[in-house]
Image (cartoon, rainbow, N blue to C red; front, side):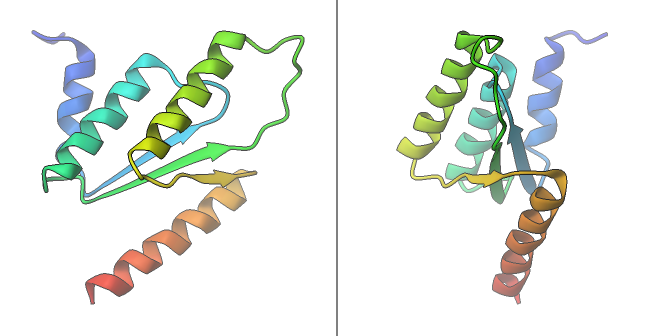
Length: 113
């Protein structure tokens, strides 16, 4: 039980992290968008998280079964992220995601040395 929304607790935890990693596949929910904005606004203010990594999974969809609102939410978030000048990465599988995270973290480690 929380005196505030449970989401406020998640947002508070984001502000304590060095890294924020957002993963998307077929939709971008309101809470996930809120979490991204919390992380991004804190990052822009020079606070934690110090690094934001955003990944969109390349998935095959059946247009007859796809929820158009979900697809729209995903495209709108991609456009929003793009408008911020933030780059997102596409991945195809869990293995591909892990490889890309490892690559990006290696770059961060090399920059801090």
